[in-house]
Image (tube, rainbow over all chains, first blue to last red; front, side):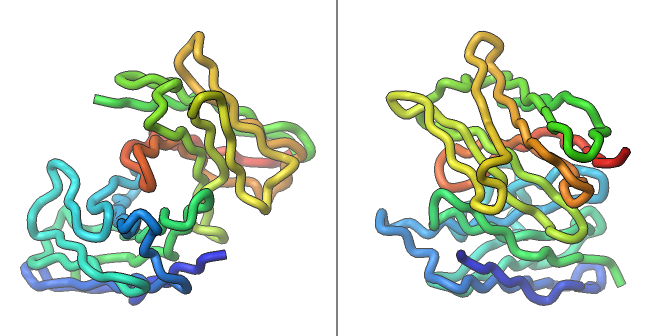
Length: 113
Length: 120
């Protein structure tokens, strides 16, 4: 089974400062169709997860452009250029290359210092 | 805009069957470009994909290996919804359960979540 590992698990950030979350897969996420199916989700307290990014770097509609995804193969990153108060929550990466099973990272809790 | 509305009991007794339903608006359970998933979340297991149903020239299912034999995900075309049944539950099945839409190797729309507690 594919194992997806995130770091750090806790991320205290000062308002206006950048933040970076790493996601590493135990197997390459490059699919035979040429796509890499790595998504990022934000979960605010008491809410369902919300997708921010799909296929490594494609932002969903309505997602602020301070969020950006990058990476390839087994190593991926979600960056927030300037953290705002509304960004508090837990962030998850998810691999969907190795169908039919999807695997999530453990989550990274972002809080304001 | 696609919306998923979950329903079902929040308390299930050990050894009984957990049953949840996810009503779809803004899309069709029979859409042959979409898969309809169940995912759960607990402090001990994190986010865990459970299974899905989808139509590709016939109805198909995939299930996580750890629950195979206990889980069934079914479509209901007459009501445009799909369901989750998890049998022989134990307290380890206590979690928030989500239904979710997969437009192709991702998950883009989630239901509101249902906390299911397994307890006598």
